[in-house]
Amino acid sequence: MTSKNNNSVIFTTQLASDVNALLQGVSSEQLFILTDQSTRKHCLPLLQTGGLFDSAQVYTMPNGDHYKTIETVVDIWTFLGERGATRHSVLINVGGGVVTDLGGFVANTFKRGIRFINIPTTLLSMVDAAVGGKTGINFNGLKNEIGVINPAQAVVICPDFLRSLDTQNLLSGYAEMLKHGLLSSREEMERLSSFDINHPDYELLANLIQTSIQVKANIVAQDPHEKGIRKALNLGHTIGHAFESYSHAIGKPILHGYAVAWGLIGELYLSHKLQGFPQDMMLETIRFIKENYGVFPITCNDYPALYEYMAHDKKNTAAGRVNFTLLKNVGNIIPDCIVEKELIFQALDFYRDSVGI
Image: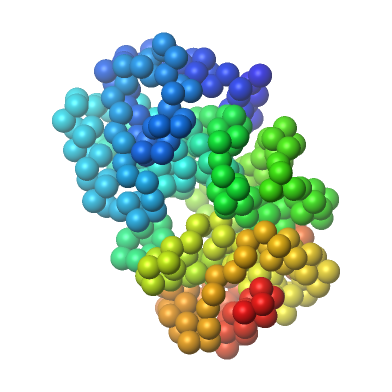
């Protein structure tokens, strides 16, 4: 079964045949694949069934966000150049968010841009990389500091990949779906908060994924280059990216989605304090996060370092002013909220109280 929406996102259970159809007219010597070690072992065989993929040239990068760097990009540019890639080549990114983010950046910059297709294999990459065209790499200790916005030719979503995904990585992607639910409706939040992520019904999950992607697609369609309403998608990410960057700095890295989930706790608190976000919905969302995501252990001694990461967030519009996306209610989005340092520290206090540390 195959379905396609207006944003070149293809949902399929016939992965190899649908990808080969996308590649009609592309010669095998002009086809390149970017993947990582885990994906090459567990997922790539689903595509190598006698079509063009079997003769494509494959670059396999190491696993992990710490390889999402300019050094990896240079190595892939070199790989493409040495193997005769041209402006007519196609790069297919098969993997999680690191692969699709970095691969999209490589494709957008090599020879001033070549076509690329994303085949996300994790829940996080399906609901986050599926639409919007954001690509990039980490730089100078900051998440996605260097990048461009330019969409893939197509994004191919195959839910079959999720059956081999561990619960931790399912939860990482599910945090972005919770965010999309908060940007959408109470009804969608009720569906998401009642889903048993530890014993998933994969057919129901596929339906939730399609709805989640459509929420993001509708926002991106209104604001492709993040000048206005697209900033809504930053909900949970100002505190979340600070948690994530800090975790790498102290040598205890956490998954992106976990950082976003914990970031949502602090940012829903700010939404309640500054915008009147309903307390019942805030507490219900926090209940789900607490039950499923555990804790990122911080103390008040960590606050200054966390604040520094927020102060250098690329969403800020002026030095020393930390910019948040907040909510007045579910689906009622208030972008560009400047929050003072003292209140941010209160939000971190609230996070610690909420998760019991």
